[in-house]
Image (cartoon, rainbow, N blue to C red; front, side, top):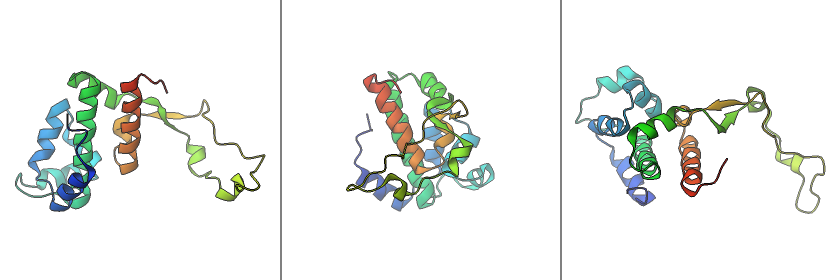
Length: 163
């Protein structure tokens, strides 16, 4: 399993640039489409198709591709090598990844929490509501933070911890 690949190795590979042909190799592991791969790499499908197999991806696209490969390997390990199950998990909206359109603009300032010496007694973290919109892991993989969240969900599945 390649989940334990050192992060420094991933950084070096991303800086060097990953060959375009790896996009297709990684997509084939679990049956992702070109449109889905373009979404993850933050590219248009046209830009993705326009690259020759021997051409190197940008640093950002290379990093995302390497993170995707790491996530897929972790998921394959978690789901006992069953690629169709990994694909289904990636496409299934999960409560753990829910968001509320109202809360996106409602970020609480740090001062609302008070300080260590005088914590606020009125501050309450935002709780999930019925208005929350569940997202699939695939939907959040357009950000590096999304990869981290997806890895966290996989870890909880692996250890049998429910959301």
